Image (cartoon, rainbow, N blue to C red; front, side, top):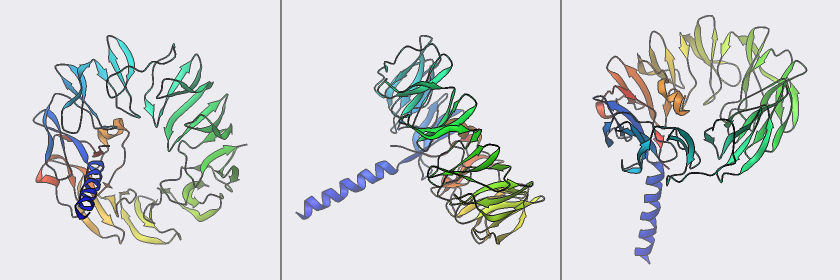
Length: 376
């Protein structure tokens, strides 16, 4: 019985380890490879070109053809494609014999209804499907989840997508259900349980639990971020913070602001940035030329270059780096700062990753480095 119990624990630990594996695309000596979170190579640099992992596979080029590798570096799909995009929802777009098509992870082509327009990437289980001037949603089984009915459907985020009929906007879920009616002049592009901003009859407000809650005097408003209960909005050319009901919780008094995270939000008056708490009190004095939101308990701040402070405002990593997102935007990962204990930075020596003490991962700089991606 003890042996069986030990075996079960070992299997569970193995599953957690596999699920937790992360790899980052790096370039060294003109070739691309992948490192793990210890800084060691999981896949040695041998590719002329490659992309970050997505949905468990990474695209790589060999002899001017593209294929896909798994986390061990073995070819899951041999190089045979002229161009490829990222896997998402078990499918990727590939160009072969001058024809774009969807393939699954076995390389099998997904049969879809005929269309006269281009194919679109899958996102969270659906892809745009266009007929004439109308757009619908295609499922991973090749069948239409939603018949083309909208003038525009924007990127799927958090299981929802912004849609347009005529000149008005609403929001659908990935089942094609209209969860916010198309009756708004403007609407946020990201769904949150705390609300989505909208503009109706020239008035900005928060759409929450089926209600439109006007924000008194607002001339602009931004999306809710993460699990924060507050988002920022503008009134009389000053920025403050509102809640789901549209009530001003922190009165407009700042020239610029960014979202709350870890209970703090970057704000600026004039050319200096500091951080306020959710009561609107200045928690970290304004003394930075720029400041980003907190993640993993640290936030990037800038003088001439970027460093990192903790939630007490103490500089824990000196301002010696650049944190530009770079090619990360192409993979859909545009977060700056620390993610799972590591931050991607650039110095005069190249690109690398810092831990929370400021130590360089693997004591090594690369010609390029992209964010770590979980291998699922």
